[in-house]
Amino acid sequence: MKYFKNIAFFYHKIIYQYNGVYYAQPLWAVPMNELSKYCHNLCMMCPVVNINKKDASFLKKLNENISILSLPLAEEGFLKKFSLINKIKNKIILDDLVNKYEFIFFECPTFYANYIYPIFRTRSIFNFSGDLTKTIKQADISFLKKLIQYTYWYLDKILLSRRANKEIAFGGNYRGIIRGKYLNQYKLVNDKTISMLQTFSIEDVLTRKPLKSFPVQINILTCQRLDASTNTRQIIAITEKLKNKGYNICWKIIGSVADYIKQDTKSLIKIFKKKIKEKKLEENIILLGNIEHGNKFNEVVDNSHVYIAPNKITGGNIGRVGWEMMSRGLPIISTPLTKRNFPTHKYDCLITKNGKDEEYINLFTYLFNNTEDYNFLSKNASQTAKNHSVEQTIRRLVDHIYYSYR
Image 1 (cartoon, helix red, strand yellow):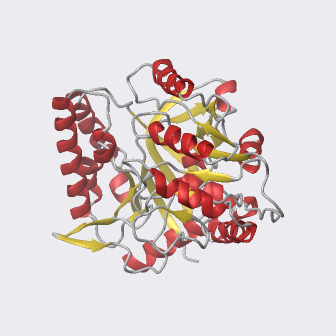
Image 2: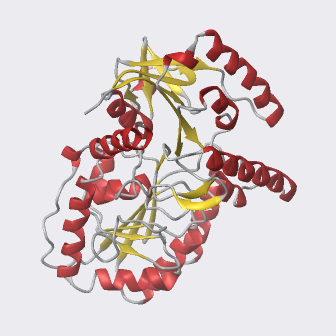
Image 3: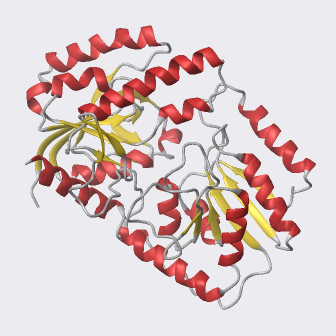
């Protein structure tokens, strides 16, 4: 395996520091720690916030060979953000980072990527981890603000796509624009799912004991933010219809309101609870709030019988959580996916075509009609997850970069 010399990762989220040690959310700390094994020095260019010991206990330490270049915290408003760009550019030039690093990763979409990219034009790697243009459609803001933001981010995304060449790295089978044409940007690799967002190790993957019979109460699990993109209406509708079909279900939801949602957290949850009560589903839909990864989180997952990902406007991927569920042998009923090699419908998961309520209900009925089908999906989910652990995905990422770049 070839090794990188030096990598810089332009990361717009916050890194935390306690007692001289750097911490990050597991979502980024785990893949970054794995990536750092392939280079002599990995520098994360990001804002840094000091925290206390208690807060640090909920985060994950970054490896010692990961250095941090502290950037200013993002200020609200486009004009203020633009004012930060020159400060960041000056710091990059002053510290001679232009010549120091072999590759520069940009986590996208981010406000800064298009503006910092020209400094590292020949060595830039864009990691597309989300789509803000879709998220903005559901934002709780005025139509005018929504139109302005949507237009800006859409143009921003197109510019990044046009600049991206075959050295791009991203999660899922992203179809972007390269030199004016819509192309599959992963034509160089067979596995079209290279993601830096995996958090489970190959050692964490488990195979469940086969079910001999289905339990009296079927436990459903969903892990996601409770915001406008969650589609809580569908959760209530599916629960009500399954209950009317005679299924005894308990749908547990791990998650809270995202920190970027301006509407009051309590009011959003209150509205959801009100609708649950109106339909008399208090015993069928349980809100667990946010649960950090660990024994308690795994206990909820391992006591569940199926994971359902409701259809969302930001769908098209089972996401990091979906892979985590598969790594625990938990069958998934998923939102529609973009074209990709993994996962596979009725082999290691169940995928709806259009994300309609009836499709979820029909697939649920299929899954809990025959224990052989259930155990087949569960076993294959674990096996597929082994090939998509953090070790495997980062190794493929490194191979892909060298194969496409050199």
